[in-house]
Amino acid sequence: MNREQISRLAHADHPIKSPLDDDSVRQLLAHGVPHGDARVLDLGCGSGEWLLRAMTTHPNLTAEGVDVSEDALRQAHDSAVRLGVQARLTLHHQEAADFRSAHSYDLVTSVGATHAFGGLLPTLAAARKHLAPGGRVLIGDGFWEHEPTPEAVEMLGDFTDLATTVDRVVADGWTPVHGHVSTRRELDDYEWACWGSLASWALDHPADPDSAQVLETASARRTEWLRVYRNTWGFVSLVLRRTSD
Image 1 (spheres, rainbow, N blue to C red):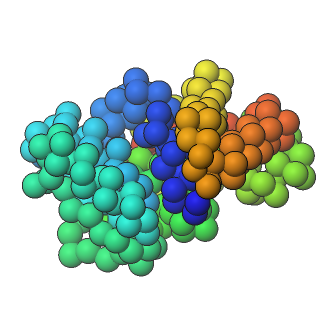
Image 2 (image 1 turned 135 degrees about the vertical axis):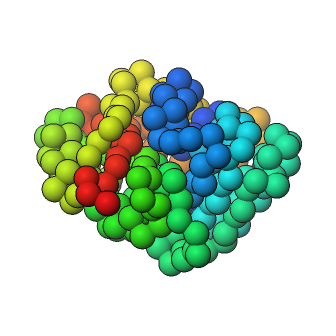
């Protein structure tokens, strides 16, 4: 079973692929979408959950999503059809960093996908190219709540603390107009959902040739979370505007 299939199973019960609950997602979109007929772009959209929620809330909103996963884009399309919003959704199967458009966007989102650009600031640089004057960026990324172990840094990446993360964003020419730091409950709920979904699938399909691999993956990822980064890693989501357009 490949990485995409593992991810799909892991997020079956948590389609927002970040440690955010439904209310936090609603609040972030409420602050991010500047008006009801906005044009929204998601760089690294996965199965399109952010776009789908924005479109169902705003019946005149149009959306575009970019992702390298053909399977995830197929899920996004199927969900859009089921929700009756497919006419307002355009999906692009390509690297988000390579995406070009003749349009500019009122909101550019990239939550939990900064790895596609090489980090937080490169993601903001990419978003800036697509942003309409007065537009907003909704971005989500990790930070260190406490001093991490070398093992945690090697596993998750070279983050900084929350204050330094925000300072870097501001120094890059952005002003936060809303933000949310994921709570311990949101962080834990996300991890339990991911590795619990994987384990449940494996236990429900004992005859499947991939069952043992999936169960082993669930166990290994759960152990990494509990023993390596649970008490050090956090997640922040920011709604940003350009300090000077």
